[in-house]
Image (spheres, rainbow, N blue to C red):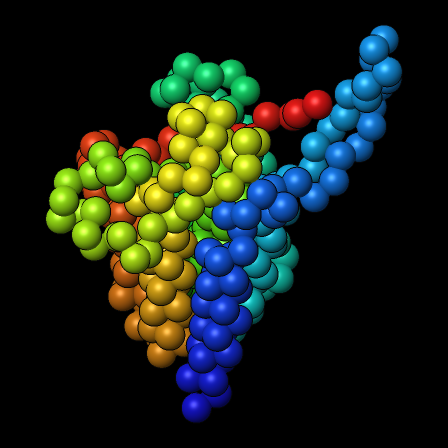
Length: 277
């Protein structure tokens, strides 16, 4: 009963946040939080550092993901020092990897790729857990490997679902206009299309799509990842470790593979917002 209540409360909080974001964040006022003046130019204008909601939701998603990882790890008796060590090492590896993968794959030096960081983290998770296991065994402590893998997958899925709200705010990772989609696809999404407003949205300055009904890629990704994370959490609390790990992993990476293959329908390039003036 307690487990069901926890998943229900988490689901209500998560889905209500996402639904609010889907409705509010496409508007122009929800892109910039503030602008910090840095230098005054000769023409009297100020050059500044823009603080965006993209950064806010990316940080919030990461924080929620870390909190979920800590909570789920604690529920299965993983020592706090092991959980913290695992998260710190993963962050130290993933953050530089997000830039390195973008430079190698996309040939862009000033871009961070979330998918690239997640890919590296997914590959390194099992050997990292085994390494921590050996260290802890010297102190007569043990990490349950499969449950920790499941907790990692759930944490990523839920954190990424919130982080995708930043893509709606910034106007990136957008799908093609409904007018360019096949009649069947356009009919499906006509009622649920995403319309981004404002000249500073990436969809506007990169593709001229401000005010244009778009395939809601960010919305689909956010919802799918949230539902996968919630399903994984329920299975995790029921001690069904394999299913708890498999569902978030298959849904998140399966969706990435599927959306990447549908190039004519979706645009899924993830870019870090530039510092504006």
